[in-house]
Amino acid sequence: MSAAQRLAEARELLAEHPIVDGHNDLPWALRQGVSPSPEGRKVRYDLDRCDLAADQSDRLHTDIPRLRAGGVGAQFWSVYVRSDYAGDEAVSATLEQIDVVDQLIARHPRDLVRALTADDMEAARAGGRIASLMGAEGGHSINNSLATLRALHRLGVRYMTLTHNDTIDWADSATDEPRHGGLSDFGREVVREMNRIGMLVDLSHVAATTMRDALAVSTAPVIFSHSSARAICDHPRNIPDDVLELLPANGGVAMATFVPKFILPAAVEWTLAADENLRAHGFHHLDTTPEAMALHRAFEAERPRPVATAATVADHLDHMREVAGVDHIGIGGDYDGTAFTPSGLDDVAGYPNLVAELLARGWSRPDLAKLTWSNPVRALRDAESAAASLSATHPPSNACL
Image (cartoon, rainbow, N blue to C red; front, side, top):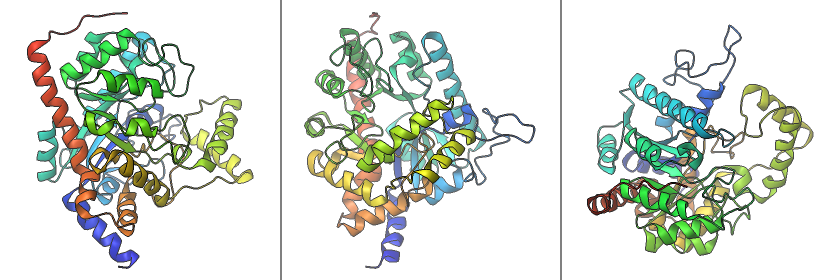
């Protein structure tokens, strides 16, 4: 089969079994301002100036035409706020992120539809619309309050990443100094309450000790919304094999990310230097505004960037399938949350290229359908079933630190 034939087969498969993408940071890109306006102001949640129904490829990885071209059938929109936001500021900013997702859905009803359950996801697929779910990225978003956690769930948030880049009061992050040896007692209670209400526990960004603690506590499937295999790229953001081996018993799903610094060993050192260059010029290292990207491009001109490809991501998926099994893997691109993307996976239109690469490696259509659609839908459905049982016998937790 030629490359063109494999790509055509990939598109055909995605028409029936579309991508469930675990993580897209478009709301944050809209918050921080994706480009200057004609008046010299940033586009901050101004959806008139940033119409997702039109091509936004000059400033974003994501718009509706490219979601359609990429075969995306369900998107977890990340309602992320940076982990240097704290307390009530973090909660308020998370609410603003939720609000802009609601605005996007309301503005584009022919393409996007709010989804709260696995049945909603299936109904969206049947109706030819993109199921829109939300995930909160970082436990700092609940300000140590289980009542706030429950409120976010009522507003439509269906997973919470226990930490972002910084260790918080009850959970250790993969990229910060540990303080708890994984989860604290309150952190374990957070996991139990997430199980009770049907919110998926997301273990991307957390320390390996936190992963293991959460899996020991959780009675519902966990996910990794955007993490890859540590055996292929030894970065603390990735999943060790012993943790991948625990997923079948838990029913969880590890969703491979496309971020080059997490998947390509040669990109790790380069990114550290590029991030330091941003900080030296007064920018946050996660900034993807036009000004920050101009600095990145100047840095890259002097020091060429190692480039990942769809094959790089496929290497991770091959390994994750071997260790965790094909029923426990998915995809979480992290578009609009990273400055750089792999060649061939430049934006959300690129998913067929990954599927074509996996077809070339001998993946079967049933296995690809599990990867793209069935596995994350099943994980959410099983979390809902666990919540129905737990909520019938356990009252809301009022535990606090």
